[in-house]
Length: 303
Image (cartoon, rainbow, N blue to C red; front, side, top):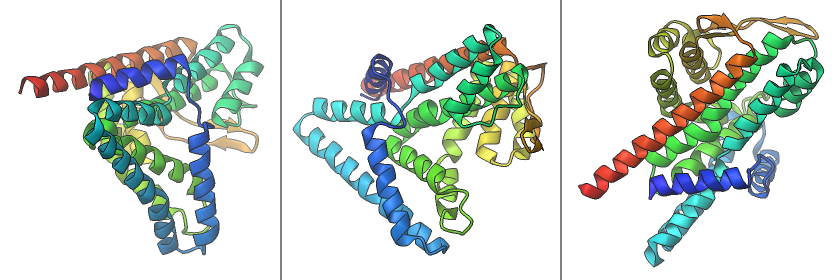
């Protein structure tokens, strides 16, 4: 059921791409904002209470609906899983972003490429050249492919029913919504997502290594990942950079000056050709995970 649920959700998402602004996600974010207004006194313990109040009821309802439908018919439970995966995944978001930026760079239209990068990823791109745009696009593509595709798939495979994708997506949304606060309210949301993403991030990084240049990916993972501020992101980016044979990270020009970032990867500087290579890496990784899950299901059936 896991394999066919994933295939169905991916086909549905390709036919009718989902969005961060779909009504279900927007409803949850509105609920999270209400909890923040009620709980936020600047203390970490109130942030913990708000996180629990945001996540646990949704998990309970999701699990209850799944097991209720399963008791009526496994087919109904399968449909529920497909709906949950469709709402929590976003493969088309990743591929569409790459296509638009890649086409703008191919046509030599730097203003359009900057506009696409700023609109799609919220990056201040006015001072960026073509190599910097390609570099940031690859970095964000690797992170987004993990958060919107592989993190969801791995969570779905690890936890029963549809609990994994829901837990992963809610934790990721709260991490994005509540981090960066001047007080301690959002500290737990950031820490909780780091813990929940610990295993998926490493499994995604290993998948990039298997489907790309394994030796360079493992070397960059071991030698460079720890230098990145967010360790889970550093592992994904270092492994992806090594697998592609491209240099990521490094300083960026911004309106206020240069922003220093550690260097990741080995090989050549990023350009529009590496954008296509990154898309290929993600597709190969997706096929790898689907084949692995199919083999596990076949083993389960024969067992």
